[in-house]
Image (cartoon, rainbow, N blue to C red; front, side, top):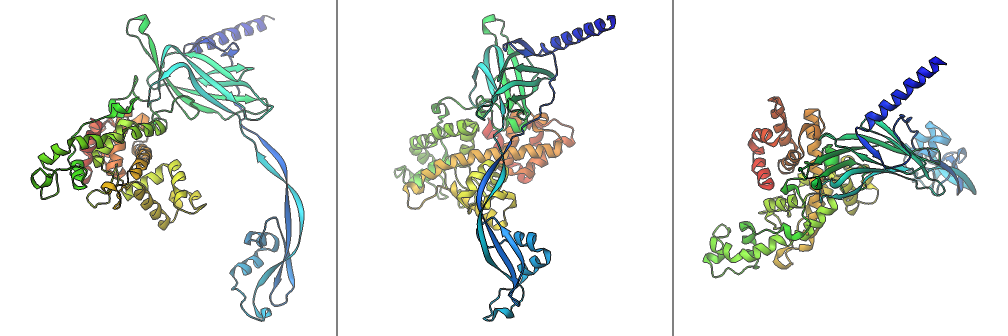
Amino acid sequence: MRKRRWLGGLLSILIAFTGTAFTRDISTALTPNLQIDSAPNPPPGPDRYTVIAVEYTEYKWYMATWKTQKAVCSVVIDHDGPPLPEDVFQDCGEDIHDTWVEQAPCLKTKQYLCEGYYTYLVDSWPAEKEIAMQLAQASAWISLEDCEPVLSTSTNICESAPTLVISGLEPLPNESIIRVEGMYNGESFSCKDTDTCKFHINQTSEEGVIVEFWAYSSYGDSSLIYTARVRVQKEDEGDPDQLYWYVDVLSSQWQGQAVATCSDSWGTFPPVGGVPEWLSTPKHSEELSSDIPYTYLAANLIRQGAVDASNCPDGGLDSSGNVNQCGLEQARPAVRDWQNQFDELILSTAKDTSVPARLLKNLFARESQFWPGIYQAAGDVGLGQLTENGADTTLFWNRSFYDQFCPMVLEDGACNVGYMHLDEYEQTLLRRALVGSVNATCEDCPLGLDLTQADFSVGVFAHTMIANCEQAGQVIYNYSGKTPGEAAAYEDLWKFTLVNYNAGGGCLAEGITHALGENLELTWENVSPFLHGACSGAVSYVNDISK
């Protein structure tokens, strides 16, 4: 008895110790049946199949020789039309199959003179077969309670200790979520007889902590194990009334406002408290307004007759076709209106894709000065000056965009293999179609531009930027051996993405390789000096867009 009491006392101490350690990260429980003193067993995962009976027609075919006109085997199939090669191989064997698929067509009038085999239909009858079908799985989702999102980032502001909410979802009728379990920063939690877990979370490091979570169903299985990275940073300005928390969550199961583009794939959070202005998205399109005297834009507006500069020397343009000072002043109001006409669309695109609105506007300003045609008869097209190489990056690195765009160009089913596995002709067709989709040049349109096409292109360039941040992240991983978030800060990763967009992955790899060779951290200040030769133009490009 004494031994048992001693073991029981030790167990109580261990449980109390475990609970105390856990509350360093999770404070007062909001779910009444939250348990934190036992490690949950690994969940079984989804296991949902049902068998359904399907009626169909079964067909019997004979395989016969041309010479003897006698059947050598029978083929039974469950689909319309003649037997397929795989049907013949299964029912007639390899030798007959090989001869049948390789033989020349029988074109002789006297068919018994032909070599090989032919098939003919003998009979058909109704049949029924059982098919195993996978049912919809249970899932689990993560969110915050009583926190306000910051536009265009994953950051949320909470005026009290943030509440993490993990909810199970059961899609099958007559079934329900019976408990939610998980691990927060290495410590376990379990909420029984409920589909939701709620608890306060304390401040973390700037790298955040890992949360694993899953849900059990009355069906007898569980959801998948999901992962999130959660960062909590407490801001104390000395006034108890000014205490608040910044909270960021990176997870495929996040139910709040969409995280900042590429944060999840990079595995990094935006800066605590918000992003720098050039990576921000304002609430209103008026905040994107600019009044910059763009010379290339002014020249095009004069050339197309949108601005009357006839009272200026040489009609406002010099012998090279560039705008002179008088023409620039004459075009100033039109230039101001033109550069701001896309602001509302840029803002809505930023909200849809989470690509920062100011980044998009700065990109268009640097690339085309908002003139969405072909740049000086070169291969650079549209507001963001897309090339075929740029289109290749978009289609390869942004699979979701490829899945939407490809069926608009290629026949049904051809796109399923993915861009990389298309033949060269199909890839070329897609690239040129994508470049054409952002080209607003139109000889029969006012000002020589189809502005509807220009509007469409804003979304294309946002998805192109997403593709470039994915490729940039892969380049960093390939050369550093670290995830992008481990290797570089959020703002620097965006600058590396702009290098990738402007100069290509080869230039980015060159700068990163040299910086790592000098044992330097991967910051823009350390990498940019190693962009030489044809890559050197990316330095001013990035600085212009990010200033």
